[in-house]
Amino acid sequence: MTRIPTPARLLAALAVSATLVLSGCAGDDLDDDKSGGGGGGDGEKVTIASQDFDEAALVTEMYAQLLGDAGYDVETQLVGQRDIYLNQMPDNIDIASDYLSGIADLVNTQANGADAEPISSNDTQATIDAVTPLLADKGIELLDASPANSQNAYFITEDYAEQLGGATALSDLEGESVTLAANKDCPGRADCQAGLEDVYGITVAKFLGTGFASQQTYDSVLNGESDLGQTGTLDVTLEDRGLLLLEDDKGIQPAQNFIPAVGSDFIADHEDVADMLNELMAALDNEKLGELLVRVTVDRESIEDVAGDFLQEEGLI
Image 1 (tube, helix red, strand yellow):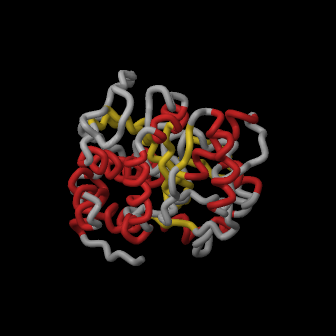
Image 2 (image 1 turned 90 degrees about the vertical axis):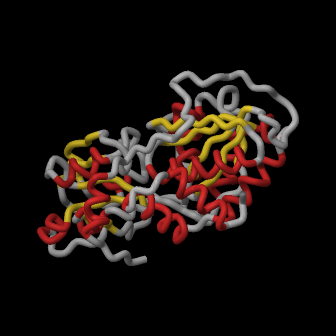
């Protein structure tokens, strides 16, 4: 989907912070005082966690407003890495707003070691089938996957693309030696540093753990500290920043459908929560999310307002 940049949007995109703080976020230590039982809200506490970049924060806010509207007392926590909240499930965290292959890869390496054969692929159902028993061992299960599928992606400056003869895809960087700015869990991952090196033949001479789609990552590439930066396929700010998204033409990115991960005991007692979140997942798609992210990351509307507008427009609240 082509978006036409404007000067106002350019200034907003350059000014926006990649980390949004949701109102009502918890502190570092989650309160594990659950009231237990029932379902249907009635002020019962629900703790939701996810990662702290715009896209994840927006969908997490949808979860929070949806459950809050149903009468639950919702607490959210956004953190830098998935393992921080996954390791607190299901005892201290009830629900994670997550991505399919991201959670599958982490659970697989936790269960089978860093050198385990990957269980994720670009086949959504096959990935769900593979990770389900590993999550069950942790007392966690998945609800319905959304059609919205946000995969990792990589970008370079337009100037660097010209130096490479008009690069548009990752394969155009074959044989290049680069500094990579990405999330801290990137080294060793088949959809990140390992895939770039083993599949695309790109030498990652230096790695900087600046974060996924963070302002630090954008700045690192823009100021020449890094050659290649990590973001997501729904990133709507790149063109206005003078950056170019590279096509994953050899397909190293697995299915990253938005999907709720929930504590098995919690969801057994709260079928209403499953119904609400499944309906939300069905309502999301990449086109809708892309437009919503324009409002958040470019137009600088509050994440709470954008999430609330979407839920109301879809008749979910």
